[in-house]
Length: 321
Image 1 (tube, rainbow, N blue to C red):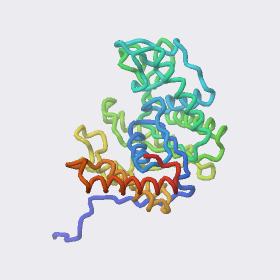
Image 2 (image 1 turned 90 degrees about the vertical axis):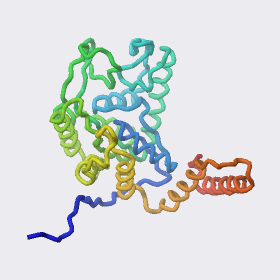
Image 3 (image 1 turned 90 degrees about the horizontal axis):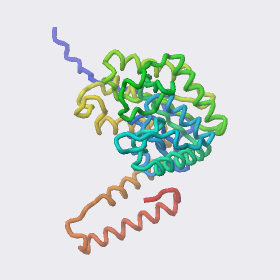
Image 4 (image 1 turned 120 degrees about the vertical axis):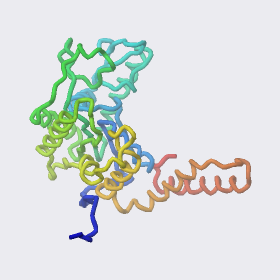
């Protein structure tokens, strides 16, 4: 017999609002996988005080732990921490975005980023850490886990899977380091929904499972260590290839916007809604490209836009267009 009941092709996860939400006084630090870049771009678009991935994208918890450890102790990077490959200087602790054509420039990039990271960690109200994978690469020569291989031949590395306990220990270290210099900060963990299928289907699932299990071992509401379910929203709520980019691995713009709306519901103070709307209006105005820049109508549009910007910056001085 035919069942006429309307079919539901979505889970429609209902998320609860968290305490200590984000507003325009909040100071945000985001570290981790490329999905953290997606959330960071949304926060920057709406002009929140945002500091993101000073060493570029980092995928595994050990690389993030190393960054935070080195930042807190203000590690001084030297020539021994760099290497030349394909006419560019690299550092295993950082993403290739930080690499440079000269060694001096790379060292300057690394050391200035370390100093700024320490300052941001000490002053942050919220730190969002996005984990991408539990797979790590250990550089055989130094027996150390790297943040990025920089296309160094794979035979120079051992590929390993961090166990749940190893991942949990790393996350505990991260939290202890941060809380030691900033006891009141809220730390939000999330797992990137981007699938690392180069590792294999089964291996990717195991990796994500280790990350999720480890996070749930250390989250602590009283100590402001929390979890935001980016991974579950993408894979359990959206769960359809129409929400993926052409590579079928990364969330597309629709999915990113949807996850952002969920994040906003959980973490962004409702009182900021009128400001978000005004910032969005101004951003669209700035992006507008007229047919005739000298037209009187466009000149009046620019004057109105500048007036809106000035009024908003007067009420919230941290906003800068």
